[in-house]
Image (tube, rainbow, N blue to C red; front, side):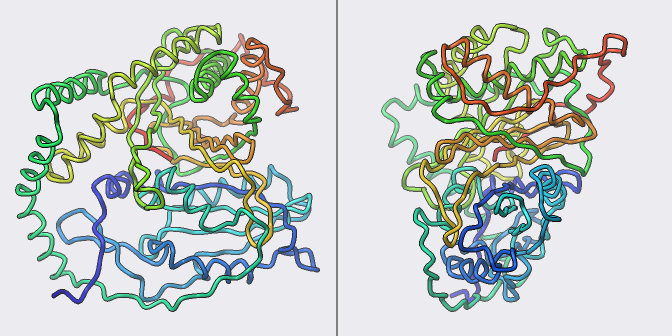
Amino acid sequence: MARHHYDRLSVQDNSFLLFETPKSPMHVSSTSIYEAGPLLRDDGGIDIERVKRATEGYLHRIPRYRQKLHFIPMADHAVWVDDRHFSLDYHVRHTALPKPGSDDQLKQLSSRIMSQPLDRARPLWETWIVEGLEGGRFAVITKIHHCMIDGSSGVDIAQIMMSPTPDRDLPPIPRYVPRPAPTQAELVADELRYRFAMPFKAIRGFRDFARESEDLRAEISRRARILVDMFGMGLSASESPINGPLSPHRSFNWLNLSLEDVKAVRRALGCSVNDVVLTVVTSAVREFLLLRGANPARIDFKISAPVSMRSEAERGELGNRVSSWILELPIDEPDPLAQLQRIHDTTQELKDSEQALGVEMMMAVAEWTPAGLLSLGAQAAQGPVHSIVTNVPGPQFPLYMQGAKLEAIYPQVPLLEGMGLGIALMSYNGRVCWGFNANPDVVPDLPDFVRLVSQCFEDLAKRAGVQATAVAADPPPAPFDAGSPPWDGSLAAGAGEGSTDA
């Protein structure tokens, strides 16, 4: 009986390690803002020692937080092992803005922290406690590698770390006893046994599939059609002025909308919240391209919209259980109501075509034949896209960290080569918190895009007969200078080579 212990990453989790490059760190991040409340010390700082003590109390509920990667020799695949040298001080970090710190300064700090990759020799997460924010507030910037979580499991972690009441009880700290890690020879031997068993696992999997299918031939035909439709989308995307070679730098920005306003628009127009979000993004992208001197009618602008495949029984588990829709935004259409109708029709077609199931099928088969279909499955999952728009539902009640109330949480989705912009949303306690992650070498004017999102939502709400809450007081972006040369595609090299979920 083996004395060592480890957990093998799923093919989907491992794919996020394979996607990572020095210019494309694959961590999921967020910037949260809190009312300092009882965590405010007499000298105006934040009680970091209490935060660390509280963190120690829940680490046993998130085992991955004290595990690091070991790579299987000659397999390009990783396993999780307990970190014998785990140090909480490395992962929970303390910094400050020059008082009184502004939101713009916090955005700049978030951008710098998010652009730095995580150290693969340690557990793949960091939490930065940022004091000095004006208005009696502080911030928490969190980075967790995508191989550990998807959007849904990220929400689950947030609710483990926080409480629905301003309770300041400190939980007991169970003793941490790291389990022995395997040697390189043991990993190789286990990997050989794993690969030898693959054909038998595949046969058992097909037998289970056949037993559970009411009409095996029809089910096989249906799934084959899904795959044909998925690959029929092509493996390239149009050039656009907001796509181009990826740099190692990032800029981060955010926006708040009222969740009730969004739901009122949804009710008035008879669609889903996601349809409203995608319509607002469509309008903003269209206006942003016009400001760049581009013709939206000549660009087939495709996005990846992640779809959770997590069942209720899988709630609370880490790792990724996510697929995606690839859809083209109707940026050629100037009327937002017509945009919404086309988006609604497209999302209904995607539900009917079960495109997300096709991606999940590719990843499931890749578990049996990782050397063969992983690259195809990953390429299908990421698609030929210009951007990512991910929308994660969060709790609709206030959360507290040691009595400090969470005001807002702004998520950040990672970028892959060719992407200039990624958009992530999380609903929380009556707000829709938008996080915008950009490559500043391609999208140096991110605040202009954020203002356009705000304005496009207000315009859609007005068309729906809804009086939207004011969300932005910034001036509108300057119109495109007709005396300047229009966009010529010079920044678009590499556009649409991939995307990922948040």
